Length: 402
Image (cartoon, rainbow, N blue to C red; front, side):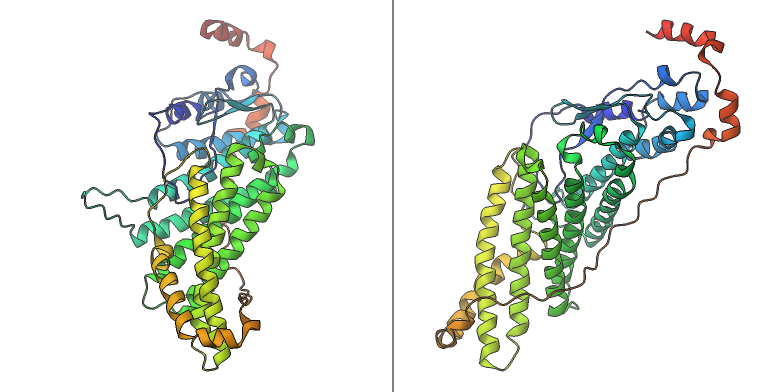
């Protein structure tokens, strides 16, 4: 792979440390060394071969993007090179080889999947501020939060492209070789989860804004709940939850689902409590009590997520939950005392009401493949597509480099 040299720098393991997670990034895969030069020499233009085996590119994402125009040419049937090169990918954490597949569509899937993971990783980094003052106070700027949302939408778009545009080109026997994190359900879950986390960040911005109404905050909390509910369904339907990373991923989604539901009931309760009828106050108290119970469950789910291997640190409270961890218990206690007599009178209404349904606001960014490298032009291709026996120097070069 053209950017494999730069990958090795990323793949070098540092001293073990317990990471902090705000945006969940699934287990990342990196390419193992794939020799494009031997199988392709004499079949394609030399400048394309040279770029495939060139020096490391400074930025990993740029390396991936520069590699794609070459890779797209390998997927074209008219070139007849789809299964010529064996592409190998390994797990970044333990270096274990996960996939070795001679199919250029698999390589395209792997590259775009990695771009998505890099976007998630960058979004996570932006949401974990560095406290250089030593005060212990960590603040994430609004610009960093908005940039994180943009990265989450890009990651979601990459994964949607993988599922809808690439998977159809891969035969069943190739798909059977995939690691579990490449199942359609897993990719869909991560894509939807990214939208949920984007909405979570937006809710945090709304909570910090004096202009945002209760209705806006309730809508965002309900949308966040829907996203994480959909992501949980997709992941639960896959077999990925049987392995270590799949179990941790599911724990993360459960934690975020409970947080979103607590927030949704809290804001729904505040709106209902503005009513003048006794029934409005009773229903509002039911919402506050439900929110309080869900908040307690979410704290346990957070601890379960952090302790599930691979172990991660509990992140400091941030965004809406930094506010709600204090407000929900306070409001639930105060309102239940205030309207306790009404609850006793109307026991039939003690179950929390259904939450309102909203049309989802965030959508994945459309991912568009770059243009195929101009060196794959048909006219140039015909000139270079000569039998290997007409390139006697090629074998000599290979002998010298082996």
